[in-house]
Length: 247
Image 1: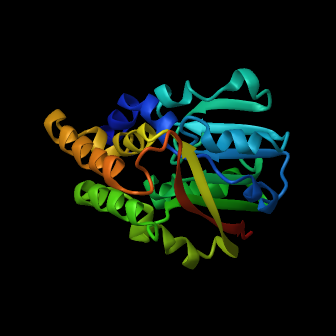
Image 2 (image 1 turned 90 degrees about the vertical axis):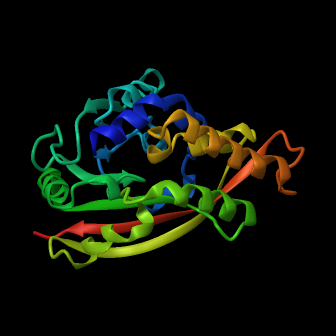
Image 3 (image 1 turned 45 degrees about the horizontal axis):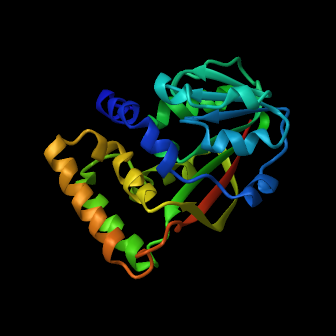
Protein backbone atom coordinates (compact mmCIF):
# COMPACT_ATOMS: atom_id res chain seq x y z
CA UNK A 1 0.00 0.00 0.00
CA UNK A 2 1.39 3.40 -0.99
CA UNK A 3 2.37 5.90 1.68
CA UNK A 4 -0.23 8.40 0.46
CA UNK A 5 -2.96 5.77 0.69
CA UNK A 6 -1.95 4.82 4.21
CA UNK A 7 -1.98 8.50 5.17
CA UNK A 8 -5.47 8.85 3.73
CA UNK A 9 -6.84 5.94 5.71
CA UNK A 10 -5.09 6.91 8.94
CA UNK A 11 -6.57 10.42 8.73
CA UNK A 12 -10.14 9.14 8.31
CA UNK A 13 -10.36 6.27 10.78
CA UNK A 14 -13.54 7.56 12.48
CA UNK A 15 -15.27 7.99 9.12
CA UNK A 16 -14.13 4.49 8.16
CA UNK A 17 -15.68 3.01 11.28
CA UNK A 18 -19.02 4.78 10.82
CA UNK A 19 -19.30 4.65 7.02
CA UNK A 20 -17.87 1.29 6.00
CA UNK A 21 -20.13 -1.75 5.96
CA UNK A 22 -19.92 -4.89 8.05
CA UNK A 23 -20.37 -8.32 6.42
CA UNK A 24 -23.34 -10.72 6.23
CA UNK A 25 -23.40 -13.39 8.92
CA UNK A 26 -24.46 -15.98 6.32
CA UNK A 27 -20.99 -15.79 4.84
CA UNK A 28 -19.42 -17.29 7.98
CA UNK A 29 -21.04 -20.69 7.49
CA UNK A 30 -19.56 -20.89 3.97
CA UNK A 31 -15.97 -20.48 5.15
CA UNK A 32 -13.86 -23.62 5.75
CA UNK A 33 -13.22 -24.55 9.37
CA UNK A 34 -9.80 -23.76 10.85
CA UNK A 35 -8.36 -23.55 14.34
CA UNK A 36 -6.25 -20.56 13.29
CA UNK A 37 -7.50 -17.93 10.83
CA UNK A 38 -5.53 -14.98 9.46
CA UNK A 39 -7.56 -11.86 8.66
CA UNK A 40 -5.23 -10.09 6.25
CA UNK A 41 -5.70 -6.33 5.87
CA UNK A 42 -8.02 -6.32 8.88
CA UNK A 43 -8.54 -2.56 8.96
CA UNK A 44 -10.65 -1.57 11.96
CA UNK A 45 -11.92 -5.11 12.44
CA UNK A 46 -15.17 -5.06 10.47
CA UNK A 47 -14.59 -8.59 9.19
CA UNK A 48 -12.54 -9.64 12.22
CA UNK A 49 -15.62 -9.33 14.40
CA UNK A 50 -17.52 -11.72 12.15
CA UNK A 51 -14.66 -14.23 12.18
CA UNK A 52 -14.52 -14.00 15.97
CA UNK A 53 -18.01 -15.52 16.14
CA UNK A 54 -16.38 -18.80 15.08
CA UNK A 55 -14.59 -18.98 18.44
CA UNK A 56 -11.33 -19.80 16.67
CA UNK A 57 -7.94 -18.11 17.08
CA UNK A 58 -7.85 -15.07 14.78
CA UNK A 59 -4.66 -13.27 13.73
CA UNK A 60 -5.77 -9.84 12.57
CA UNK A 61 -2.96 -8.40 10.44
CA UNK A 62 -3.13 -4.68 9.57
CA UNK A 63 -0.34 -2.33 8.40
CA UNK A 64 -1.89 0.95 9.62
CA UNK A 65 -1.56 1.27 13.40
CA UNK A 66 -4.34 3.87 13.70
CA UNK A 67 -6.78 1.44 12.13
CA UNK A 68 -5.57 -1.62 14.02
CA UNK A 69 -6.06 0.29 17.28
CA UNK A 70 -9.81 0.33 16.62
CA UNK A 71 -10.14 -3.45 16.52
CA UNK A 72 -12.11 -4.16 19.73
CA UNK A 73 -9.80 -6.77 21.27
CA UNK A 74 -11.27 -6.00 24.71
CA UNK A 75 -14.39 -7.96 23.73
CA UNK A 76 -12.82 -10.29 21.16
CA UNK A 77 -10.82 -12.63 23.36
CA UNK A 78 -9.76 -14.95 20.53
CA UNK A 79 -8.34 -12.13 18.40
CA UNK A 80 -4.64 -11.25 18.29
CA UNK A 81 -3.79 -8.02 16.47
CA UNK A 82 -0.50 -7.87 14.58
CA UNK A 83 0.94 -4.85 12.77
CA UNK A 84 2.14 -6.16 9.44
CA UNK A 85 1.46 -6.34 5.73
CA UNK A 86 0.25 -8.95 3.26
CA UNK A 87 3.68 -8.82 1.67
CA UNK A 88 5.39 -9.70 4.96
CA UNK A 89 2.94 -11.56 7.18
CA UNK A 90 4.14 -11.71 10.82
CA UNK A 91 3.27 -15.39 11.28
CA UNK A 92 5.09 -18.75 11.06
CA UNK A 93 5.01 -21.09 8.09
CA UNK A 94 1.90 -23.28 7.73
CA UNK A 95 0.16 -21.76 10.74
CA UNK A 96 -3.32 -21.14 9.32
CA UNK A 97 -5.96 -23.31 7.75
CA UNK A 98 -7.74 -20.22 6.41
CA UNK A 99 -6.57 -16.80 5.24
CA UNK A 100 -9.23 -14.16 4.63
CA UNK A 101 -8.84 -10.90 2.73
CA UNK A 102 -11.96 -8.76 3.18
CA UNK A 103 -12.11 -5.78 0.82
CA UNK A 104 -8.31 -5.76 0.81
CA UNK A 105 -6.79 -8.12 -1.76
CA UNK A 106 -6.80 -5.55 -4.58
CA UNK A 107 -4.38 -3.42 -2.52
CA UNK A 108 -1.71 -6.11 -2.25
CA UNK A 109 1.43 -6.56 -4.32
CA UNK A 110 0.21 -9.74 -5.98
CA UNK A 111 3.45 -11.68 -6.30
CA UNK A 112 4.75 -10.86 -2.82
CA UNK A 113 1.42 -11.27 -1.06
CA UNK A 114 0.45 -14.58 -2.67
CA UNK A 115 3.91 -15.95 -1.89
CA UNK A 116 3.36 -15.05 1.76
CA UNK A 117 -0.20 -16.39 1.80
CA UNK A 118 1.05 -19.68 0.33
CA UNK A 119 3.75 -19.79 3.04
CA UNK A 120 1.44 -19.29 6.04
CA UNK A 121 -1.30 -21.64 4.80
CA UNK A 122 -1.30 -25.26 5.88
CA UNK A 123 -1.41 -27.92 3.15
CA UNK A 124 -4.87 -27.78 1.56
CA UNK A 125 -5.55 -24.56 3.47
CA UNK A 126 -8.11 -22.14 2.07
CA UNK A 127 -7.91 -18.55 0.87
CA UNK A 128 -11.11 -16.49 1.00
CA UNK A 129 -11.32 -13.26 -0.99
CA UNK A 130 -14.29 -11.13 0.07
CA UNK A 131 -15.59 -7.81 -1.17
CA UNK A 132 -18.54 -5.61 -0.33
CA UNK A 133 -19.52 -4.22 -3.73
CA UNK A 134 -21.91 -1.26 -3.86
CA UNK A 135 -25.24 -2.28 -5.41
CA UNK A 136 -25.43 0.19 -8.27
CA UNK A 137 -28.81 -1.12 -9.38
CA UNK A 138 -30.13 1.34 -6.78
CA UNK A 139 -30.23 4.81 -8.44
CA UNK A 140 -28.78 6.84 -5.57
CA UNK A 141 -25.95 4.32 -5.12
CA UNK A 142 -25.15 4.61 -8.84
CA UNK A 143 -25.04 8.40 -8.47
CA UNK A 144 -22.77 8.06 -5.44
CA UNK A 145 -20.45 5.77 -7.41
CA UNK A 146 -20.23 8.25 -10.27
CA UNK A 147 -18.90 10.85 -7.82
CA UNK A 148 -16.34 8.40 -6.47
CA UNK A 149 -15.29 7.19 -9.93
CA UNK A 150 -14.49 10.75 -10.96
CA UNK A 151 -11.61 10.79 -8.47
CA UNK A 152 -10.40 7.18 -8.57
CA UNK A 153 -7.74 7.58 -11.28
CA UNK A 154 -5.44 4.51 -11.14
CA UNK A 155 -6.12 3.67 -7.49
CA UNK A 156 -6.24 -0.14 -6.97
CA UNK A 157 -9.90 -1.21 -6.84
CA UNK A 158 -11.86 -4.43 -6.92
CA UNK A 159 -13.77 -3.21 -9.96
CA UNK A 160 -10.67 -3.18 -12.20
CA UNK A 161 -10.55 -6.97 -12.03
CA UNK A 162 -6.74 -7.06 -11.92
CA UNK A 163 -6.93 -9.28 -8.84
CA UNK A 164 -8.56 -12.00 -10.97
CA UNK A 165 -5.13 -13.24 -12.09
CA UNK A 166 -5.39 -15.60 -9.11
CA UNK A 167 -7.87 -17.70 -11.10
CA UNK A 168 -4.94 -18.65 -13.37
CA UNK A 169 -2.44 -19.17 -10.54
CA UNK A 170 -1.52 -22.86 -10.32
CA UNK A 171 -0.73 -22.50 -6.60
CA UNK A 172 -4.41 -21.89 -5.79
CA UNK A 173 -7.36 -23.94 -7.04
CA UNK A 174 -10.70 -22.13 -7.24
CA UNK A 175 -13.36 -23.88 -5.18
CA UNK A 176 -16.41 -21.67 -5.57
CA UNK A 177 -17.75 -18.14 -5.78
CA UNK A 178 -20.90 -16.91 -4.07
CA UNK A 179 -22.68 -13.62 -3.55
CA UNK A 180 -24.91 -12.34 -0.77
CA UNK A 181 -27.26 -9.33 -0.78
CA UNK A 182 -26.43 -7.13 2.18
CA UNK A 183 -27.45 -3.71 3.48
CA UNK A 184 -25.69 -1.57 6.05
CA UNK A 185 -28.06 0.49 8.21
CA UNK A 186 -26.74 3.94 9.05
CA UNK A 187 -27.83 7.54 9.51
CA UNK A 188 -27.63 9.58 6.29
CA UNK A 189 -24.38 11.07 7.57
CA UNK A 190 -22.89 7.59 7.16
CA UNK A 191 -23.14 8.00 3.39
CA UNK A 192 -20.91 11.05 3.69
CA UNK A 193 -18.50 9.14 5.92
CA UNK A 194 -18.41 6.34 3.35
CA UNK A 195 -17.26 8.87 0.75
CA UNK A 196 -14.71 10.64 2.95
CA UNK A 197 -13.17 7.37 4.16
CA UNK A 198 -12.31 6.36 0.58
CA UNK A 199 -8.53 6.42 0.22
CA UNK A 200 -8.33 8.67 -2.84
CA UNK A 201 -10.90 11.10 -1.43
CA UNK A 202 -9.15 11.34 1.95
CA UNK A 203 -5.93 12.62 0.34
CA UNK A 204 -7.60 15.31 -1.79
CA UNK A 205 -6.96 19.00 -1.02
CA UNK A 206 -9.53 20.40 1.39
CA UNK A 207 -11.29 22.48 -1.28
CA UNK A 208 -11.73 19.39 -3.46
CA UNK A 209 -13.04 17.42 -0.50
CA UNK A 210 -15.58 20.21 -0.02
CA UNK A 211 -16.78 19.62 -3.60
CA UNK A 212 -17.22 15.94 -2.80
CA UNK A 213 -19.18 16.83 0.33
CA UNK A 214 -21.45 19.12 -1.68
CA UNK A 215 -22.09 16.50 -4.35
CA UNK A 216 -22.80 13.71 -1.85
CA UNK A 217 -24.99 15.99 0.27
CA UNK A 218 -27.03 16.77 -2.85
CA UNK A 219 -27.81 13.07 -3.18
CA UNK A 220 -28.77 12.79 0.49
CA UNK A 221 -31.01 15.86 0.36
CA UNK A 222 -32.72 15.15 -2.96
CA UNK A 223 -33.09 11.43 -3.56
CA UNK A 224 -36.62 10.22 -2.68
CA UNK A 225 -35.24 7.06 -1.06
CA UNK A 226 -33.21 9.13 1.41
CA UNK A 227 -35.17 12.32 2.08
CA UNK A 228 -36.48 12.57 5.62
CA UNK A 229 -35.10 9.24 6.82
CA UNK A 230 -33.18 9.10 10.12
CA UNK A 231 -31.82 5.66 9.22
CA UNK A 232 -31.10 4.50 5.67
CA UNK A 233 -29.89 1.24 4.15
CA UNK A 234 -26.74 1.33 2.04
CA UNK A 235 -27.12 -1.70 -0.26
CA UNK A 236 -24.21 -3.95 -1.21
CA UNK A 237 -23.61 -7.30 -2.83
CA UNK A 238 -21.00 -9.22 -0.84
CA UNK A 239 -18.80 -11.44 -3.01
CA UNK A 240 -16.92 -14.50 -1.75
CA UNK A 241 -14.28 -16.30 -3.82
CA UNK A 242 -12.78 -19.42 -2.23
CA UNK A 243 -9.48 -21.04 -3.22
CA UNK A 244 -7.49 -23.97 -1.84
CA UNK A 245 -3.71 -24.15 -1.60
CA UNK A 246 -2.17 -26.68 -4.00
CA UNK A 247 0.84 -28.60 -2.75
